[in-house]
Image (cartoon, rainbow, N blue to C red; front, side, top):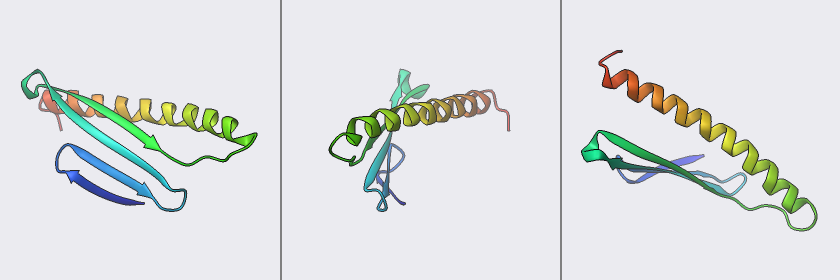
Length: 86
């Protein structure tokens, strides 16, 4: 994968040339910088025909699980750092 930062500190883009997927991670500050909204979006090509809908369903399910875990890890990190813990 190739990672770029088109908007430093706010947007990361991960491009996987192997499967032609692009995932964008966006951080929007809220509450005067005391909070943030993190958004993940993934664009990828899927098969046509009968396997396409199944592939999209399974990929969506898998990515939601992964993104929930990542958001939980970010929340733990942010909470720990806001309390001054290492």
